[in-house]
Every structure is written in C-alpha cells, then in structure tokens.
Image (cartoon, helix red, strand yellow):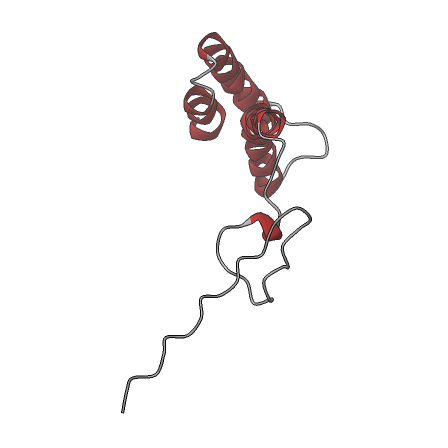
Length: 109
C-alpha cells in the first residue's frame, strides 16, 4: 500500500491530475502482484521486488528524466568554486597580469 499508493501520490504531487491516477493504478497493480502473481514469481522476495519496481518505474524514472532534461549542465570538477591542489592557471589571452606591489621599504635604523 505504501509503495504503490503513497509514493506516487506524494512523489508526483506537482503533476496533480497524474498523481491520483498513478496511485489508483498502483493499488490495482499491488493487488494483482499479491493475489495473482506471474508464474515465475511465487516467493515472497520476488513479490516484494515486483512491488518495489512499480514506484521506481512510475515515480523515480520520470522525475529523474525530468530533472535531467531541465538541468543539462552539471559542473565539472574544474568549475567548482573551492580551491584545488593544483597551481593556479596562467592568465588567458587578452588578460593583463597585475604585478605584485613592491615590498615596503625597510625601517630606518
């Protein structure tokens, strides 16, 4: 009940009309998997795997595909803001290197 009804109901709540349809189909799917399992699925673990498969296919896969389609650029390690162990890169073409300020004069004796 929780896997096939509640997970699609809350996981797909941004797709409001779709989430109730998928949840109700999940109840039917759960009843069929438990009462009339396929011929090769008679053990309890295999029935549990069929029940886990429903939310993976109807919730996790569509949400993952949607995220992948709307966020195509993933940052490379070189784009990350924190410093790395390597030396800084030299300035590119058209960028003037700013010289370091001269050291302060020594104090008078």
